[in-house]
Image (tube, rainbow, N blue to C red; front, side):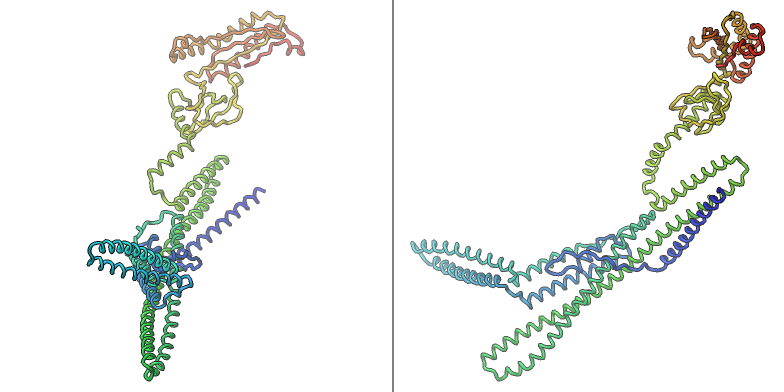
Length: 617
């Protein structure tokens, strides 16, 4: 089963590797294509219509909006040309609107006709009242006495009525403008609007955005998307310019045919005027004069339409050049993005190959299997971390504010790696005067054992159990991070001469005098531990800071207490850590000999019950 699992894993790795290689080749091909060809323009989207006015200013407003977008140095020329042509088209549109207003006065509605009649009556009344004021003024100038006073009163009344007539005329004019019947007012409004638009066009300048290299894959994509939106608006502006040129061409052709037809009709009419009566001749001459003026205005409209057609075509061509420049900028951004994708794929392929190579090298090394697995896991994690960091730098780019980035990264790493940092500091504490060394017997967080490994971040103990037990290793390795040396506490039982307190417990059955055996055991313990106790007291006195600590005795301590079925004797003594097991075995043998000599001989079946039981705490 393991063989098939290994083969399956190898097969999946090969599949991933093959997919990455294919993507790498495709990215390389796209990189080469974008390095020499333009990106195809996208005509799918459209821009919103500009603000409508009485005169169509869409070409200028569109060019103005495009000029306000971020513009590179390569786009400056076409942007200025588009803005100039848009301004020229706006001027021609206003001129055409004025001609249309002159040639084709607006057809008055019924309401406008009533207002016009009211305006005519108000103007006639105003003229009469103005004449009356002039007559009274002249009469007052030559009158005298009471007649002059009377004429003065009449003149004041006439002036007041003249003001009322003027107000009525103004009100009628405003009503007629709102109803669309004032041709001169419309023309004046268009002239004022043109002046305001020309002032706005003169104040519009194209600002070149500084060229800044993209710092990552995401920034390349953002720039490409911004250029795509700009290209969409340029395609819509070009389409609108071409549509306007087509529409004006149709208007030009229609007006041209209309003038040709009028010319053909006017020839017979001029021939018929020779024999007509005088009144009819004068009327015909007036009609001919009006027709000639209308024809002249139509010819001016044709010339204006020709100019507008040419301007719109040039504007469309300028937008076409602008689109090509933006497409080239898009190609550059796509090329930069593909370079980032190419590097990411190369990193992925290199990581897979390096991981496979390290796996083979570690598999051929003659070291323990667990250590091989540990090394492989560590190298894989390091490769993954390094690869992720490089990929993130490629995607997001290097930070612009390096100092701020390093500060924030350092603060984040300090919080995330707090335990490791404290463990590293704890290693220096453990290396100090009151620290621990390899082979020391210590207690850390309630676990006792022998120090078998002391690293920069971890301490490993070989567990031996409680110090009153046998002290033999349990076979378990316990690992602690070194932060216990800073944040917690530990006990080291191996300092100085490695003196440890040990205990010997003996059970004496009832019916036997315990004191001779107790005295003999105490004497044996004193003889065996006298040298160790003397050395321990001397070391404690040298290392003691206070008098109380220096007065602690190291002599054996005897404890006797009655228990059910006999007496329990406990002797606590000091022993060197290295000699503790040997000394314990020696004292146990001595206790067994003393118990055997003190008890009378019994049958072999009862010897086990008669002998005292020796136990070690």
